[in-house]
Length: 390
Image 1 (cartoon, rainbow, N blue to C red):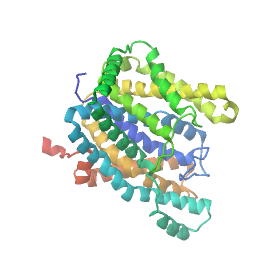
Image 2: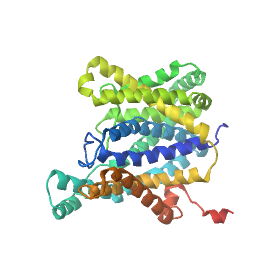
Image 3: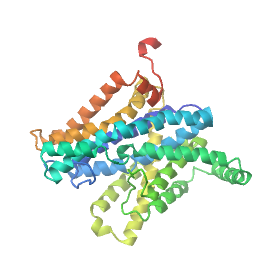
Image 4: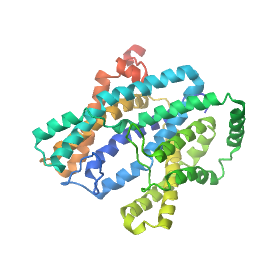
Protein backbone atom coordinates (compact mmCIF):
# COMPACT_ATOMS: atom_id res chain seq x y z
CA UNK A 1 0.00 0.00 0.00
CA UNK A 2 1.46 3.31 -1.07
CA UNK A 3 1.80 6.18 1.37
CA UNK A 4 -0.98 8.72 0.96
CA UNK A 5 -3.18 6.26 -0.94
CA UNK A 6 -6.76 5.83 0.26
CA UNK A 7 -7.28 2.41 1.83
CA UNK A 8 -10.64 1.12 0.66
CA UNK A 9 -10.77 -1.72 3.18
CA UNK A 10 -10.67 0.74 6.07
CA UNK A 11 -13.31 2.87 4.34
CA UNK A 12 -15.62 -0.16 4.28
CA UNK A 13 -14.80 -1.04 7.88
CA UNK A 14 -15.63 2.47 9.04
CA UNK A 15 -19.06 2.15 7.44
CA UNK A 16 -19.65 -1.23 9.06
CA UNK A 17 -18.58 0.10 12.47
CA UNK A 18 -21.15 2.88 12.10
CA UNK A 19 -23.94 0.53 11.01
CA UNK A 20 -23.22 -1.92 13.82
CA UNK A 21 -24.33 0.90 16.09
CA UNK A 22 -27.80 0.65 14.55
CA UNK A 23 -27.90 -3.08 15.28
CA UNK A 24 -26.61 -2.48 18.80
CA UNK A 25 -29.36 0.01 19.64
CA UNK A 26 -31.98 -2.30 18.14
CA UNK A 27 -30.98 -5.06 20.59
CA UNK A 28 -31.28 -2.97 23.76
CA UNK A 29 -35.03 -3.34 24.30
CA UNK A 30 -34.80 -7.11 24.03
CA UNK A 31 -31.93 -7.82 26.40
CA UNK A 32 -32.69 -10.08 29.34
CA UNK A 33 -31.09 -7.59 31.71
CA UNK A 34 -32.41 -4.04 31.48
CA UNK A 35 -30.01 -1.71 29.74
CA UNK A 36 -30.97 1.24 31.90
CA UNK A 37 -30.98 4.91 31.03
CA UNK A 38 -33.56 6.16 28.56
CA UNK A 39 -33.84 2.96 26.53
CA UNK A 40 -37.15 1.01 26.48
CA UNK A 41 -37.28 -2.57 27.70
CA UNK A 42 -39.76 -5.04 26.24
CA UNK A 43 -40.95 -7.19 29.16
CA UNK A 44 -42.93 -9.42 26.80
CA UNK A 45 -39.95 -10.53 24.73
CA UNK A 46 -36.32 -10.67 25.82
CA UNK A 47 -33.50 -13.18 25.66
CA UNK A 48 -29.92 -13.47 26.89
CA UNK A 49 -28.69 -13.82 23.29
CA UNK A 50 -29.40 -10.11 22.85
CA UNK A 51 -27.25 -9.46 25.94
CA UNK A 52 -24.45 -11.47 24.35
CA UNK A 53 -24.85 -9.71 21.00
CA UNK A 54 -24.83 -6.29 22.67
CA UNK A 55 -21.81 -7.23 24.80
CA UNK A 56 -19.96 -8.45 21.71
CA UNK A 57 -20.69 -5.33 19.65
CA UNK A 58 -19.95 -2.92 22.48
CA UNK A 59 -16.62 -4.58 23.20
CA UNK A 60 -15.04 -3.39 19.95
CA UNK A 61 -17.37 -1.16 17.91
CA UNK A 62 -16.53 2.31 19.23
CA UNK A 63 -12.85 1.55 20.02
CA UNK A 64 -12.50 0.43 16.42
CA UNK A 65 -14.34 3.51 15.18
CA UNK A 66 -12.02 5.90 17.03
CA UNK A 67 -8.94 4.00 15.92
CA UNK A 68 -10.08 4.40 12.31
CA UNK A 69 -10.93 8.08 12.96
CA UNK A 70 -7.37 8.67 14.19
CA UNK A 71 -5.99 6.95 11.11
CA UNK A 72 -7.99 9.17 8.73
CA UNK A 73 -7.21 12.24 10.84
CA UNK A 74 -3.48 11.95 10.15
CA UNK A 75 -4.09 10.98 6.53
CA UNK A 76 -6.20 14.09 5.99
CA UNK A 77 -4.06 16.48 8.04
CA UNK A 78 -0.93 15.81 6.00
CA UNK A 79 -2.81 15.59 2.73
CA UNK A 80 -4.56 18.98 2.83
CA UNK A 81 -2.76 20.98 5.54
CA UNK A 82 -3.91 22.48 8.82
CA UNK A 83 -6.13 25.30 7.54
CA UNK A 84 -8.04 23.07 5.12
CA UNK A 85 -8.14 20.31 7.76
CA UNK A 86 -9.92 22.60 10.23
CA UNK A 87 -12.45 23.71 7.59
CA UNK A 88 -13.01 20.12 6.45
CA UNK A 89 -13.56 18.73 9.95
CA UNK A 90 -15.86 21.61 10.86
CA UNK A 91 -17.98 20.92 7.81
CA UNK A 92 -18.07 17.13 8.23
CA UNK A 93 -18.27 16.92 12.03
CA UNK A 94 -18.90 20.33 13.59
CA UNK A 95 -21.94 21.34 11.53
CA UNK A 96 -23.65 17.90 11.81
CA UNK A 97 -23.01 17.88 15.56
CA UNK A 98 -24.42 21.31 16.40
CA UNK A 99 -27.28 20.91 13.93
CA UNK A 100 -28.00 17.47 15.35
CA UNK A 101 -28.14 18.79 18.91
CA UNK A 102 -31.03 21.02 17.83
CA UNK A 103 -32.82 18.90 15.23
CA UNK A 104 -31.94 15.25 15.94
CA UNK A 105 -31.27 14.70 19.65
CA UNK A 106 -34.62 16.10 20.94
CA UNK A 107 -36.63 13.93 18.52
CA UNK A 108 -34.47 10.89 19.31
CA UNK A 109 -35.12 11.33 23.01
CA UNK A 110 -38.85 12.01 22.64
CA UNK A 111 -39.93 8.33 22.37
CA UNK A 112 -37.58 7.48 25.24
CA UNK A 113 -39.37 10.04 27.39
CA UNK A 114 -42.69 8.57 26.27
CA UNK A 115 -41.61 5.11 27.43
CA UNK A 116 -40.48 6.48 30.79
CA UNK A 117 -43.71 8.36 31.45
CA UNK A 118 -46.03 5.56 30.28
CA UNK A 119 -44.31 2.41 31.52
CA UNK A 120 -42.41 3.71 34.54
CA UNK A 121 -44.60 6.54 35.79
CA UNK A 122 -47.99 5.24 34.66
CA UNK A 123 -49.00 8.29 32.59
CA UNK A 124 -51.65 8.05 29.91
CA UNK A 125 -50.46 8.46 26.30
CA UNK A 126 -51.88 11.96 26.20
CA UNK A 127 -50.18 13.00 29.45
CA UNK A 128 -46.94 11.38 28.38
CA UNK A 129 -47.04 13.14 25.03
CA UNK A 130 -47.39 16.56 26.65
CA UNK A 131 -44.70 15.93 29.28
CA UNK A 132 -42.28 14.49 26.72
CA UNK A 133 -42.81 17.43 24.38
CA UNK A 134 -41.96 19.93 27.10
CA UNK A 135 -38.94 17.90 28.18
CA UNK A 136 -37.52 17.95 24.66
CA UNK A 137 -36.58 21.60 25.06
CA UNK A 138 -34.56 21.14 28.24
CA UNK A 139 -30.79 20.51 28.25
CA UNK A 140 -30.56 16.78 27.53
CA UNK A 141 -26.90 16.32 26.71
CA UNK A 142 -25.58 15.04 23.41
CA UNK A 143 -27.17 11.54 23.49
CA UNK A 144 -25.99 9.35 20.57
CA UNK A 145 -24.03 12.24 19.04
CA UNK A 146 -21.46 11.96 21.83
CA UNK A 147 -18.94 10.48 19.37
CA UNK A 148 -19.01 13.65 17.27
CA UNK A 149 -18.47 15.70 20.43
CA UNK A 150 -15.43 13.58 21.32
CA UNK A 151 -14.10 13.77 17.78
CA UNK A 152 -14.24 17.57 17.89
CA UNK A 153 -12.18 17.45 21.10
CA UNK A 154 -9.58 15.19 19.51
CA UNK A 155 -9.40 17.25 16.32
CA UNK A 156 -8.89 20.40 18.37
CA UNK A 157 -6.19 18.68 20.42
CA UNK A 158 -4.54 17.48 17.21
CA UNK A 159 -4.18 21.04 15.95
CA UNK A 160 -2.82 22.21 19.32
CA UNK A 161 -0.28 19.38 19.53
CA UNK A 162 0.89 19.89 15.95
CA UNK A 163 1.46 23.58 16.68
CA UNK A 164 3.32 22.76 19.88
CA UNK A 165 5.78 20.82 17.76
CA UNK A 166 7.16 24.18 16.63
CA UNK A 167 8.62 24.63 20.13
CA UNK A 168 12.21 23.24 20.03
CA UNK A 169 12.00 21.21 23.25
CA UNK A 170 8.66 19.70 22.29
CA UNK A 171 9.90 18.96 18.77
CA UNK A 172 12.84 17.01 20.17
CA UNK A 173 10.50 14.88 22.32
CA UNK A 174 8.32 14.16 19.31
CA UNK A 175 11.30 13.27 17.17
CA UNK A 176 12.57 10.83 19.82
CA UNK A 177 9.15 9.22 20.07
CA UNK A 178 8.91 9.00 16.28
CA UNK A 179 12.28 7.27 16.11
CA UNK A 180 11.14 4.78 18.76
CA UNK A 181 7.83 4.13 17.01
CA UNK A 182 9.48 3.70 13.60
CA UNK A 183 11.88 1.13 15.06
CA UNK A 184 9.14 -0.87 16.79
CA UNK A 185 9.27 -4.50 15.66
CA UNK A 186 5.65 -5.50 15.03
CA UNK A 187 6.60 -9.05 14.12
CA UNK A 188 7.05 -9.80 17.83
CA UNK A 189 3.95 -10.86 19.77
CA UNK A 190 4.62 -8.65 22.79
CA UNK A 191 3.54 -5.49 20.96
CA UNK A 192 -0.16 -6.38 21.27
CA UNK A 193 0.23 -6.74 25.03
CA UNK A 194 2.08 -3.44 25.11
CA UNK A 195 -0.74 -1.67 23.25
CA UNK A 196 -3.28 -3.20 25.66
CA UNK A 197 -1.61 -1.94 28.84
CA UNK A 198 -2.69 1.74 28.54
CA UNK A 199 -6.32 0.63 28.10
CA UNK A 200 -6.04 -1.55 31.19
CA UNK A 201 -4.62 1.35 33.23
CA UNK A 202 -7.20 3.85 31.98
CA UNK A 203 -10.18 1.61 32.72
CA UNK A 204 -8.84 -0.13 35.83
CA UNK A 205 -11.02 1.72 38.32
CA UNK A 206 -14.09 1.72 36.11
CA UNK A 207 -16.85 -0.52 37.49
CA UNK A 208 -17.59 -2.38 34.23
CA UNK A 209 -15.33 -4.47 32.03
CA UNK A 210 -15.68 -2.16 29.05
CA UNK A 211 -15.84 1.62 28.92
CA UNK A 212 -19.22 3.08 28.06
CA UNK A 213 -19.96 6.63 26.93
CA UNK A 214 -20.43 10.08 28.40
CA UNK A 215 -23.41 11.93 26.92
CA UNK A 216 -23.08 15.18 28.89
CA UNK A 217 -21.89 18.53 27.53
CA UNK A 218 -19.56 18.69 30.51
CA UNK A 219 -18.02 15.20 30.61
CA UNK A 220 -18.20 13.48 33.98
CA UNK A 221 -15.80 10.64 33.20
CA UNK A 222 -12.26 11.60 32.27
CA UNK A 223 -11.42 7.93 31.76
CA UNK A 224 -13.86 7.77 28.83
CA UNK A 225 -12.15 10.67 27.10
CA UNK A 226 -8.73 9.14 27.72
CA UNK A 227 -9.85 5.70 26.53
CA UNK A 228 -11.21 6.80 23.18
CA UNK A 229 -8.47 9.41 22.85
CA UNK A 230 -5.83 6.70 23.26
CA UNK A 231 -7.39 4.67 20.45
CA UNK A 232 -7.65 7.79 18.30
CA UNK A 233 -3.94 8.42 18.87
CA UNK A 234 -3.15 4.79 18.10
CA UNK A 235 -4.95 5.15 14.79
CA UNK A 236 -2.87 8.25 14.04
CA UNK A 237 0.31 6.24 14.67
CA UNK A 238 -0.88 3.33 12.55
CA UNK A 239 -1.21 5.63 9.55
CA UNK A 240 2.45 6.43 10.09
CA UNK A 241 3.40 2.73 10.03
CA UNK A 242 1.36 1.16 7.26
CA UNK A 243 3.72 -1.81 7.21
CA UNK A 244 1.60 -3.01 10.16
CA UNK A 245 -1.21 -3.75 7.71
CA UNK A 246 0.60 -6.75 6.24
CA UNK A 247 0.97 -8.19 9.76
CA UNK A 248 -2.72 -7.62 10.50
CA UNK A 249 -3.78 -9.29 7.26
CA UNK A 250 -1.58 -12.28 7.97
CA UNK A 251 -2.81 -12.69 11.57
CA UNK A 252 -6.44 -11.62 11.13
CA UNK A 253 -7.96 -15.05 11.82
CA UNK A 254 -5.81 -15.64 14.90
CA UNK A 255 -6.68 -12.22 16.35
CA UNK A 256 -10.41 -12.63 15.74
CA UNK A 257 -10.61 -16.20 17.09
CA UNK A 258 -8.71 -15.37 20.28
CA UNK A 259 -10.76 -12.19 20.66
CA UNK A 260 -14.01 -14.14 20.28
CA UNK A 261 -12.95 -16.70 22.90
CA UNK A 262 -12.03 -13.95 25.34
CA UNK A 263 -15.34 -12.21 24.60
CA UNK A 264 -17.33 -15.33 25.52
CA UNK A 265 -15.37 -15.80 28.74
CA UNK A 266 -15.79 -12.14 29.69
CA UNK A 267 -19.51 -12.32 28.99
CA UNK A 268 -19.76 -15.22 31.43
CA UNK A 269 -17.82 -13.21 34.03
CA UNK A 270 -19.99 -10.12 33.46
CA UNK A 271 -23.19 -12.20 33.64
CA UNK A 272 -22.04 -13.62 36.98
CA UNK A 273 -20.47 -10.42 38.25
CA UNK A 274 -21.49 -11.05 41.87
CA UNK A 275 -19.40 -14.23 41.89
CA UNK A 276 -16.32 -12.84 40.15
CA UNK A 277 -16.28 -9.35 41.63
CA UNK A 278 -13.03 -9.69 43.57
CA UNK A 279 -9.86 -7.66 43.21
CA UNK A 280 -7.92 -10.46 41.52
CA UNK A 281 -10.69 -11.59 39.17
CA UNK A 282 -11.56 -8.04 38.21
CA UNK A 283 -7.92 -7.11 37.55
CA UNK A 284 -7.50 -10.13 35.29
CA UNK A 285 -10.85 -9.47 33.62
CA UNK A 286 -9.95 -5.84 33.00
CA UNK A 287 -6.73 -6.76 31.27
CA UNK A 288 -8.46 -9.45 29.23
CA UNK A 289 -11.02 -6.84 28.13
CA UNK A 290 -8.23 -4.43 27.12
CA UNK A 291 -6.47 -7.23 25.26
CA UNK A 292 -9.70 -8.14 23.47
CA UNK A 293 -10.26 -4.52 22.37
CA UNK A 294 -6.87 -4.52 20.65
CA UNK A 295 -7.28 -8.01 19.18
CA UNK A 296 -10.70 -7.30 17.71
CA UNK A 297 -9.72 -3.86 16.43
CA UNK A 298 -6.60 -5.13 14.69
CA UNK A 299 -8.25 -8.37 13.58
CA UNK A 300 -11.16 -6.63 11.90
CA UNK A 301 -8.80 -4.19 10.19
CA UNK A 302 -6.81 -7.13 8.83
CA UNK A 303 -10.00 -8.91 7.77
CA UNK A 304 -11.36 -5.94 5.82
CA UNK A 305 -7.99 -5.12 4.29
CA UNK A 306 -7.80 -8.69 2.99
CA UNK A 307 -11.34 -9.09 1.65
CA UNK A 308 -12.59 -5.56 0.91
CA UNK A 309 -9.54 -3.54 -0.09
CA UNK A 310 -10.72 -2.85 -3.62
CA UNK A 311 -12.50 0.21 -4.94
CA UNK A 312 -16.22 -0.57 -4.93
CA UNK A 313 -19.21 1.63 -5.73
CA UNK A 314 -21.32 -0.42 -3.33
CA UNK A 315 -19.03 0.04 -0.34
CA UNK A 316 -18.41 3.69 -1.14
CA UNK A 317 -22.17 4.20 -1.23
CA UNK A 318 -22.64 2.37 2.07
CA UNK A 319 -19.80 4.39 3.58
CA UNK A 320 -21.46 7.63 2.46
CA UNK A 321 -24.93 6.57 3.65
CA UNK A 322 -23.82 5.15 7.01
CA UNK A 323 -23.25 8.62 8.48
CA UNK A 324 -26.83 9.73 7.78
CA UNK A 325 -28.22 6.35 8.83
CA UNK A 326 -26.50 6.57 12.20
CA UNK A 327 -27.43 10.20 12.83
CA UNK A 328 -31.14 9.56 12.25
CA UNK A 329 -31.74 5.93 13.22
CA UNK A 330 -32.31 6.15 16.95
CA UNK A 331 -35.67 7.90 16.94
CA UNK A 332 -37.08 5.29 14.55
CA UNK A 333 -35.70 2.39 16.56
CA UNK A 334 -37.11 3.58 19.87
CA UNK A 335 -40.50 4.49 18.36
CA UNK A 336 -40.81 1.02 16.85
CA UNK A 337 -39.71 -0.67 20.06
CA UNK A 338 -42.24 1.39 21.98
CA UNK A 339 -45.10 0.71 19.56
CA UNK A 340 -44.45 -3.06 19.54
CA UNK A 341 -44.80 -3.26 23.34
CA UNK A 342 -48.30 -4.58 24.18
CA UNK A 343 -48.94 -5.12 20.47
CA UNK A 344 -49.96 -8.28 18.62
CA UNK A 345 -46.63 -8.45 16.80
CA UNK A 346 -45.02 -11.79 17.77
CA UNK A 347 -42.05 -11.26 20.05
CA UNK A 348 -39.64 -13.15 17.83
CA UNK A 349 -40.41 -10.76 14.93
CA UNK A 350 -39.97 -7.54 16.87
CA UNK A 351 -36.20 -7.21 16.66
CA UNK A 352 -35.93 -8.00 12.90
CA UNK A 353 -38.84 -5.66 12.18
CA UNK A 354 -37.35 -2.84 14.24
CA UNK A 355 -33.99 -3.23 12.53
CA UNK A 356 -35.33 -3.85 9.02
CA UNK A 357 -37.81 -0.96 8.99
CA UNK A 358 -35.21 1.43 10.43
CA UNK A 359 -32.55 0.47 7.89
CA UNK A 360 -35.04 0.69 5.01
CA UNK A 361 -36.34 4.14 5.97
CA UNK A 362 -32.95 5.66 6.73
CA UNK A 363 -31.38 4.40 3.50
CA UNK A 364 -34.36 5.55 1.42
CA UNK A 365 -34.37 9.00 3.00
CA UNK A 366 -30.63 9.18 2.36
CA UNK A 367 -31.11 8.35 -1.31
CA UNK A 368 -34.12 10.64 -1.86
CA UNK A 369 -33.36 13.64 0.37
CA UNK A 370 -29.66 13.63 1.27
CA UNK A 371 -27.17 12.13 -1.18
CA UNK A 372 -27.45 14.73 -3.95
CA UNK A 373 -28.44 17.69 -1.78
CA UNK A 374 -26.59 20.23 0.35
CA UNK A 375 -26.97 17.85 3.32
CA UNK A 376 -24.99 15.19 1.49
CA UNK A 377 -22.40 17.80 0.55
CA UNK A 378 -21.92 18.56 4.26
CA UNK A 379 -21.81 14.92 5.34
CA UNK A 380 -19.50 13.51 2.67
CA UNK A 381 -19.01 15.99 -0.15
CA UNK A 382 -20.86 16.41 -3.46
CA UNK A 383 -21.96 13.29 -5.30
CA UNK A 384 -23.09 12.99 -8.91
CA UNK A 385 -25.68 10.53 -10.11
CA UNK A 386 -24.08 7.56 -11.80
CA UNK A 387 -25.60 8.35 -15.21
CA UNK A 388 -23.69 11.62 -15.24
CA UNK A 389 -20.41 9.75 -14.82
CA UNK A 390 -21.05 7.36 -17.73
